[in-house]
Image 1 (cartoon, rainbow over the protein chains, first blue to last red):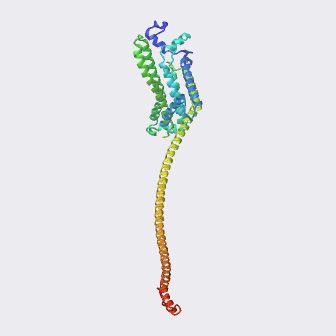
Image 2 (image 1 turned 30 degrees about the vertical axis):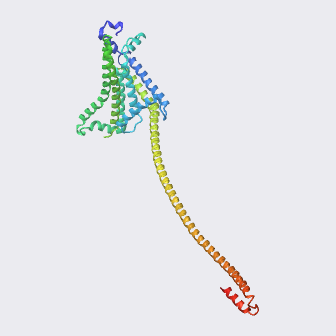
Image 3 (image 1 turned 135 degrees about the vertical axis):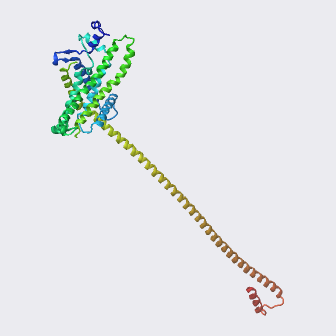
Length: 258
Length: 159
């Protein structure tokens, strides 16, 4: 339940407190330390686990951790191969990074909502929001990076002229140039926005419901918390998967020459 | 909820992660997977080939066995035939030998019979002469009747 300081502000205070990031600085140049810290830690966890498996990788009988890692790798590789037909050194590792990193972000959602903020509180930090995917900065950082790659590959594969042609002359031919351009711009810009907002929205709402459940009397909490957590296992995996697949789809679209 | 510099920090982290994954994580793992796949395929192919070889060997063994059986049957037949031949041959030889022995015996018997007849004849003639001599001693002069005696003796010898 809420800490003493916020109990007085009631349920609204509790919810707002849980969804306020630990930030330093003012205006645009402020930093959400919790988001940066947890995503960096989770990223490090990801590369450490996979690096250990990669170093011990053997073509003989794999160890349990290697088998697990290989399962994920093959899964991602299959997804990429199904969608993306060109040859790229970048796309499969990119997809893997997105899948695992986003999954780990989302996984933070399954920790009881009060534990980590309580620990942080003891260490003197007033606010603590532990799920990086409930921070628009985190989801947009991913989607804007992907967007940059889309633009980069579009220009690399089709050339500046080819890309400009695609923006202006499809889908209705050169006579409808301004209209085409408008459509295409909306289409392109919708990609990063939808990617980021989909992930953010799902996880923000999920976290909010966990917080609401935490406001209920203790004897009801398990009744609602347990099914929601189980359901959330599906949600977090699905959202990570969707983010990965859409990234691969967008990049393969950027690779296709019309 | 505001967008701020966190975005830039997150993008840097993301770039580093992707770079690290691309450089150090993906290639060795996918390499190991592909290599193992190739190895398994190789093993399966080898197993299939082994099975095929075994089938061939079994077929060959059956053929060899059949041939050997055929050969042994042939040999037995030949041996039987040869044995029959030998038996027949020895039968023939024995018959001829028997006939020859019988002939020899017959010849011997004939010869012995002749000898006996000769001896008997000589004895009979001697006896007859003796008897005749006895009888004639009183009546016939040996010198007077010499021609007659020799004539009779000759006739006896011819008989």
